[in-house]
Length: 165
Image 1 (cartoon, rainbow, N blue to C red):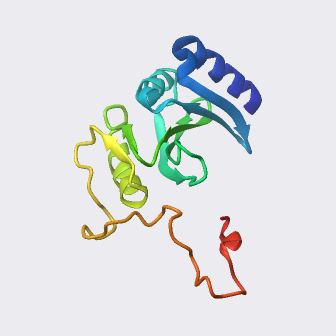
Image 2: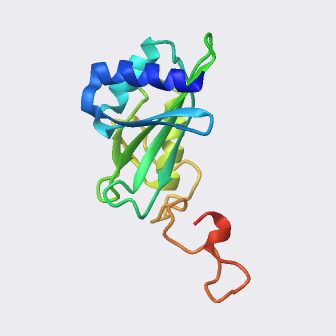
Image 3: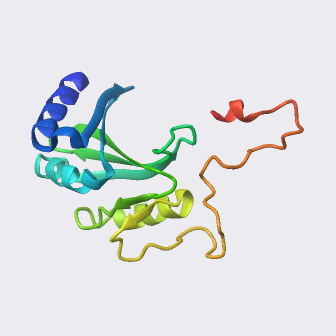
């Protein structure tokens, strides 16, 4: 059923948004659609009109080896009456980590975007109050970016591979 949903959503979105839909794939149990960051709000509005009216989660990702698209926002949408779920990705470069805010579509995105900004440094353009929410204002780094080793490099019993790096 999930592959059917992936094909259905990809066809609909490609028809409307064309090359703004960068990719689509089935990852584990979720259809995942990657969208150009400039179009993420429009794509989510279209999905909202199609029944995906609950933003389950919004978070960030950091892939330091993905040059030009190191940071990204991940959106989980749910169509409760039909019990359909989809994950969307919008990627940005670390030099320009900005993605349009989703607060105009889902007011609940407000806190999630602030949290994502606080931990990943993604600047949600148009957000009504984008500032740190959980970390100290004085912090000049974003702790969830993979920029720092997790363990003492001199230790031989642990390394970053144990933490998925």
